[in-house]
Image 1 (cartoon, rainbow, N blue to C red):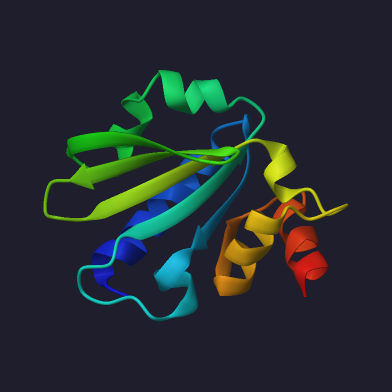
Image 2 (cartoon, rainbow, N blue to C red):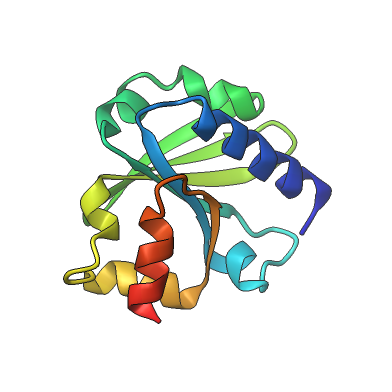
Length: 136
């Protein structure tokens, strides 16, 4: 993992701890699976009880660098903000409601994401830990 990615993950973890609406954050995708290459984006899932607070006001994205571009993408119950930062780092912030992490039953798409690789960054109430256990 590059130094810039490690710094981003630390910043996101600190940000999440200061945001009461953020329930959990996980690194997913190639960085979580250990298969990231030099040009790989950073994929995060942010579980929040108020997705509109992250999707409506986007000033929070500036906490992680100088924003060059933002693209909105929809993936089932997850809405992603794909952010290009100055310096070339691309981060996909997947904003998800709590039901994304429900364990009874686990959503099929969620199961695939977790099986492909998930590293929990912030999970004070064990929401993602329970999901990880349910997926096995």
